[in-house]
Image 1: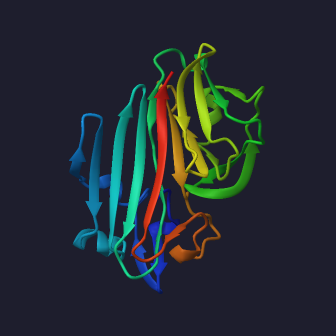
Image 2: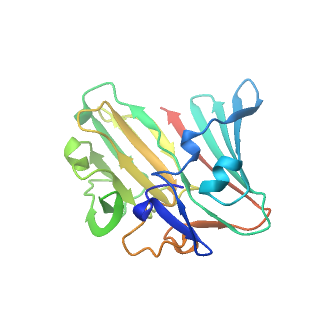
Length: 233
């Protein structure tokens, strides 16, 4: 589950469950189930521990593939139950910025209104701001992250390029992910470009997971696939 639930709590069919921020998968050990010279596939299956927190039978596969200067990260989610399964998933890759932070610039694929939402107590608030751009460019400054992450519920851009001293450095493609988070810590030498399928609760959320804003629902015995890529330029 991506993001924070209100009171770390949700309900399914009126029964209450508890999940910490970003859910349980990130704290669990995955099994390596396949590998080649250029790829590795890891699997997490529902078990007695997960069913206490999330009452659905599933398999989550993470598939990492190297292709020249690119890393492709694929998520495969398999609903093994005979009922619909609500879920969200996201990534949190941190990209090293070895030079001075202000030497880097974000370049969005398209010229668009970059409205982002502010977090309040780790939940999505109704307060928004617009990230100002010049020719789709946003110079990096720690002040941008004074109120935590920049959260874009929707974007027209399907990719973002990090420029180092005005030269292309890293490109992140996220066509399969409608939402994006961008985050760093003050004085840190990295930037997180985070493709998301779903995001934190708002204060208005009812608690019913099927009604959660941004939630995905996978039909019984079906599979969900999504992929993003990070390319060194």
